[in-house]
Figure 1 (cartoon, rainbow, N blue to C red):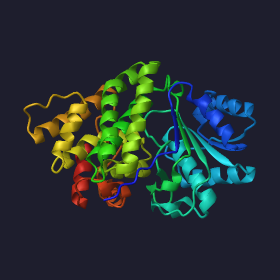
Figure 2 (figure 1 turned 45 degrees about the vertical axis):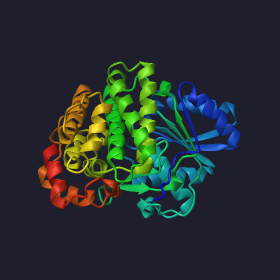
Figure 3 (figure 1 turned 90 degrees about the horizontal axis):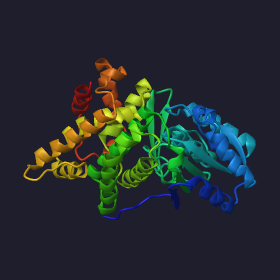
Figure 4 (figure 1 turned 180 degrees about the horizontal axis):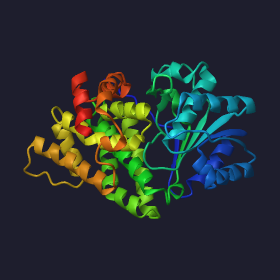
Length: 382
């Protein structure tokens, strides 16, 4: 069976990446950027730093800082209007997953027309999006280099999964200097998001040797560096290693896709407006308990990548060791213990399960679930 591998054509990683990227943007001949970001990054001066660098190369910038933590269809419309009014010839996303996803939505609709909800699903668009340069400031979502775009449909209160090769940025930038001193909670949530990407890609039915290599290395790096990145925010080595880890995890899930953790977390985010990485972290061990029925050996490999000694254990015991290691790492970075702490209510589980089963991310889970089984996983996580 043929396999396709998607990734931006150019990816810059490591210290001083932003300056290198500005030179590349200049060489591409762009003249006016719509910068899609959020108000906190404007407030700390990070956006001004980038716009100043662009201006030295003769590149103008228009700033759209209205992106919400879970970007919405309205955010996409607002950004698109600003882009059109100012005749921008490319888009820069600056931030974490929310600005990247919103920018993808804007750039895709700019060339394909209609509304972003028209592109829900897999490869629905027909034209390449407006050129997008994604500058990352967190180590977690990997949205800066993937073909995944998650937008909240405000009318339906769900997160739409747009999986489309045309949303892939032309250039991704991961500069650990932009990730220093990020809040502990944000570092923890995004780091556990990256772990979820790697784990789900590794147990996916679409996994292949390339995605396996990326996923396992990502898990090793996250296990070795996440706690330091959380507790010692200025540790440039830990930040850089987490940047590489989340990028590798992105390479894995961008091509092997994901599973029920994301299918379920998307519903929590859309319904309750909850942080995506935290939802993933809480659901991850519970979904893997379910997956252990069919993929215990794969979970055993994950246990080894997380430093567990599985010599002499059965496959099921090895799988359980992986699940316990995931729980331990989550607790070590102060992720909430359950969904109840986030305000999730048992009476909502049926509708959450309904929507989770419609999410494209669930298609590659190693075992397909019934509605009752999804409800049971949600309930176990309460």
